[in-house]
Length: 402
Image (cartoon, rainbow, N blue to C red; front, side, top):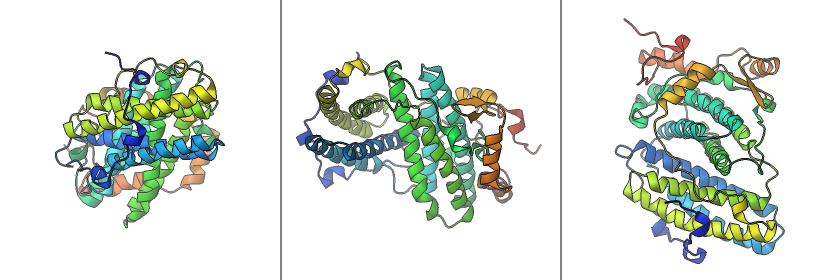
């Protein structure tokens, strides 16, 4: 049965405020919970964080006092939702363990979106990015083994492979080459708008996370690795946010944000394996239905259009966390040597790329490379989790002792 959130009624806004007791959610068990439950938690934290940031920015540009008050009321609820969601993460997990889950989110969410995206240009943008996050997972997994003496397979549970992607040191590009061509808001499919918002929000959350946790480490190599990958995440936010049509009005952007929240909460309610967490997704969906109703009314009043002119008539197929091993391996085999130039892609280095490499690396070995060699010396090997056979790129296969 199709689900059209524009036709559903949610919890009235006046009834959505929760007490501190209600917000004191029990975190998931890091040893027993489904890794994809943790991925869904991190994804929704990113979505709620983006909703809060966007609402603040809109309020700063909105001359209508009544609308600013409405934004503040909804934003307070979004902030409570964000706390409830993010506080589901287990306090027992280290920052590095949470980091590895962040990168598992980036790999499997972006790969799924790339598989489902109907627009070839947007699909390529997601395919390009996923190979970089895949490499970040590999670098952090080696850092994890080296400084915490544990293996990432306990976290990713064999659902996501851990091996080299596009090398991180080759991800440092001239900023102008991180800006993509935006979709046309009047021509693109509604699902494409949702995909762009989702991946932008997830990458923005990762950028913010690394900004804050990187300097908390004492080990120099850990600080350096977070700094290097944190800069790449800034590139990724530029990459994905530039896909969104800047010609969308504030009211249209608000409508898209609220619809996307309904889409994702509904998706995760449909696919969640933990009944307790599923109930939270359902509660938040019923809150978001009211937020969407209010955004739709504002859109009709200020934009003079019907929301169904720009939104899907029913929610698309649920966003699903699932293994994407074969898909990622195919991309590794065919696109690992891509870089960007202007709003396009090439398979060879160009002058602007090489100049940026010299400026950033200054003939020094990047932290992302150092961590692999240092862990190999300390642990006796580099860390990988290759569940589907040798690396699809022969030059990146690990030499194993016979």
